[in-house]
Length: 158
Image 1 (cartoon, one colour):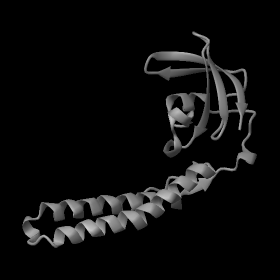
Image 2: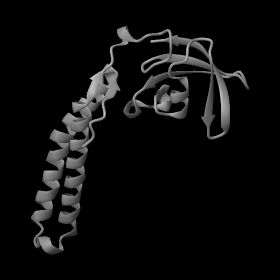
Image 3: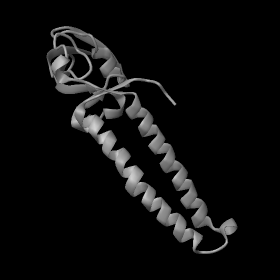
């Protein structure tokens, strides 16, 4: 699979590990139960439930392999080592839209941890890419679906 290194917060890494553990234990047990039930219903060549359960098993194993690959290439980011003089991954950035004056605060995280409702945006998103490397007081011209928007970086913390 991929050899792409991904960087995670402690919370994001713990979430991945928990999901993997649940899929390996409860997920596999549930699929095994479904397969056993379907097998008990007779002729496997014409048993749609058995085919569906085997498909679900394949999807589950693919998801497990994907999570194992992600974890094998995951690196924990230490907040103590984040440079707050410029925007980088794990930075909490407050930006001000120069056109309408609206301010937003986002934490830049890996693609897998992004959650806009929680204020976490990916470093690979248009806004994330546009902010990376900028310093407090600098302007960032970011291409959005609504066109180019100019933001001022008003604060950078961890």
